[in-house]
Length: 103
Image (cartoon, rainbow, N blue to C red; front, side, top):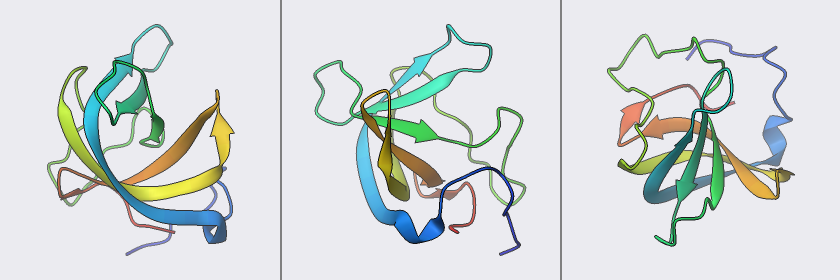
């Protein structure tokens, strides 16, 4: 992998590797969409998904951001700070496809 530092992200030592599955919730009310994951099927977001800047797409896979209502599996790094009372997961893989290098 290359170096992807300097994106204003958190300390990599505080990231916990996690794999979560559930329904994607996409909030398009902002200038760039916000992504969430509903893990338990109750219609409420359980995680905030961080896919990086809105313009980012991986150059080594066909992975795409999910559509609202898609069932997805995310592998990523969960950090201990909350965003709007939700844990944040920095996405490394979506549905088994590479998204970005872990820190």
